[in-house]
Image (cartoon, rainbow, N blue to C red; front, side, top):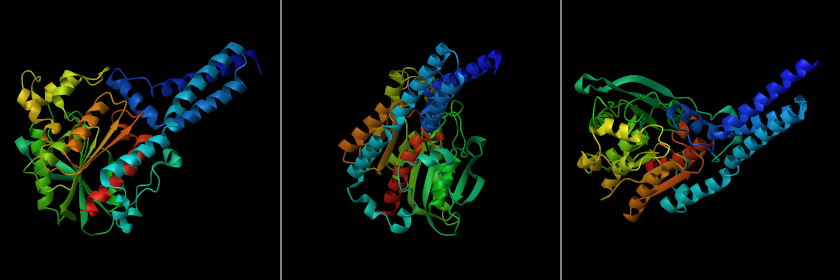
Length: 400
C-alpha cells in the first residue's frame, strides 16, 4: 500500500470518527437557532444508529489509521461519541420505570385491566424495541381521506384529513392538532402517528386552523371548536362516535387542544393529550428559554398582538393553566427535559395545578428529549411516548 493511499485512508477514517462524534454531540448541546435545532431534536432519537456509527468509526480507525497521533485523535472522537450515545441508551429503562409509575399514580394500579382485551392486544407490547429503531414501527392498513373542507372563515378554506380503520364501523374519535408556533403547518403533519392510531381502532381527524400573525388569537381556538362541531355533526358519515372524543395536540396544537378541552361550554371531551404544549403564555414571554432558538417573545407577539404588559388579559385568556378551576377531562402531559422551545417546567406546573385541583393528570418527562422529539416516529423518545399514549387513550375511550 502506497504512502499516499495510507494518508488518504487515515484522513477518511478520521473524518468518519469526527462526523460521528459531531452528530452525537447534539445529544447534549443546546441548539442556538432553528437550523441547528434539527440536530438537537434528531440526535437523541437516532442514538442507536449513532452508537453503531461511533463503534464502527473506532474499529475502522484501529484498522486503517497508521499515524499514531491521528489514530489517538480518532479514538478520542469515537470514545466520546460512544459515551454520549450511551447516556441515552442506559437511561431508557429507568425512564420507562418512571413513566409506568406515573401512569399508575394517575390512573390507578389496575388501569390496564380496565382496557378491553380486543384493544390491548393491538398495542405495543414493550415501551422500547431496539429493532424498531432500525426497521421502523409497523403501522398497519387504514383508509385515508384528504382535503375535507370543514369551514371557510374570512375566506380561508380549512380542511382536515381523516384516517379510518380498514373495516367499516363506528370508532372513537381522536382529534389531532398540529404544531408550528401557531404560524405554520397543516393537517398532513405526523402521518405515521395518525395511521398507527387508525390501524388500532380509532377514527383520527387531523384538523387545520388559521395562522398568526395574519389571524390573531382567538381565531385559532375558534377554528378548533368549529372543527369539533363539524366532526360531531358528520360523525356518522366518517364512522366516529361523537360521544367518545379525545383531543391530542403538539406544541401550539397542544395549547389549542387544552384550551378547547378546558372551556366551560365545550363539547363532551373524554380526555386531552398535550405533547410539549405551552400552558402559561405570560410566564413564557417573561422568562424565555436560554438559548431561545425560536424567539419566543416574537412568536407570542405575533399570536396575541403585543406583550403581556400591553395585553395582560389576553395573555391570561390564552393560557390553559388559568382554566384549571372546575371539572376537566383527564390530561396526559408529555415533555422533554431538554426542550428549548417549551421548557419542561411548564409541563410540571400544569401537572401540579391539575393534581392539586383533584383532576386526573399524568406527566411523562423524557430526560434526553428536545422539542418535537416525535418527529422521528421510530426514535427512542417517541417509542416510549407512543407506548404510554396509546394506553392512556385506550383507558380514556373504553373505561369511562
